[in-house]
Image (cartoon, rainbow, N blue to C red; front, side, top):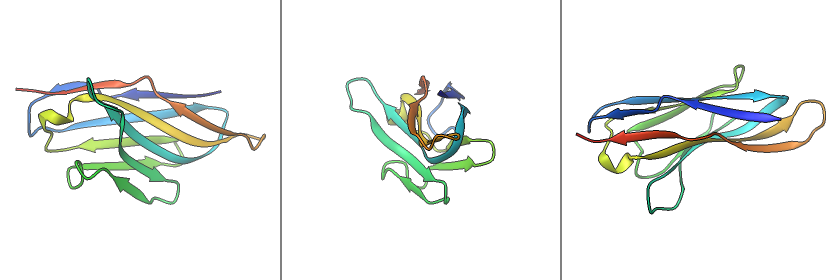
Length: 121
């Protein structure tokens, strides 16, 4: 089993910063991709940022230059540093990971429970 646990929810003012963290646990051999998605009310879930085990990153155009995704492969964690936050960044942010289960060569994908980020004055 693989579980993802997010932390770092918060209410921040426009222009503020917030750091989200996600920790993967379970019978994990390795993680290929870690990513952050978000979903605002009435909107589809969208990919915010992703990072591969190689360190390669990708960002949604709307967050480029403001958000930074990083991972610690040894700890199986991924962070999302969010700066210059805007009201339109308000959403439930969810961690996502894909990889392999230890010993079995079985792939997994897992979602975190989601954490609320609200940007408002």
